[in-house]
Length: 180
Image 1 (cartoon, rainbow, N blue to C red):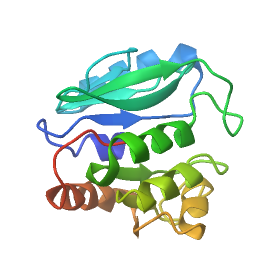
Image 2 (cartoon, rainbow, N blue to C red; image 1 turned 120 degrees about the horizontal axis):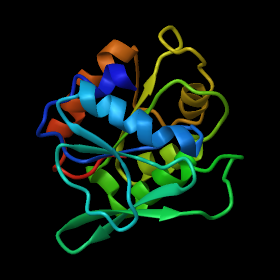
Image 3 (spheres, one colour; image 1 turned 90 degrees about the horizontal axis):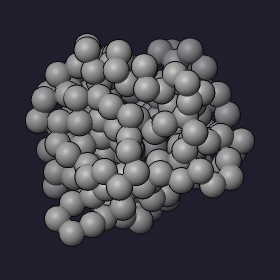
Image 4 (cartoon, helix red, strand yellow; image 1 turned 180 degrees about the vertical axis):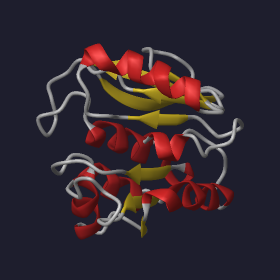
């Protein structure tokens, strides 16, 4: 994730991130990324407005969803049951992006084990979002991106080093809004 976030400009639309990570690590992970990136990186807070130039990481104890509100979007957190054995779950975020953000969204699936996110990314594609998955060669574990590629959710499969440029290209093709 670091390799992607450090290449984004300060004026990026808001970014929402789910990382399968225990709750005791997500805050320090966000603070570490914040020191390396031009964008601000922080742990998401329930009800917080999504701002340009900021990446919001789901706390390890909660699902993160995006919700459309007057004049923009906000982060919604939930401690509901795990999905795909995960809380936070990528599927939860991606399904909310499909409904709330629609064709303005860009979905990215990076290396990871299992199937979490594949169905949500497919819902994003069906809602008009542009989706990019990390390729097998640059993935540590090509589980999650593989599943999203197999089910037809991905528009593109790209090397990790190429993903930031692919995201920026996709953003130029859509209206600015939060990205899941």
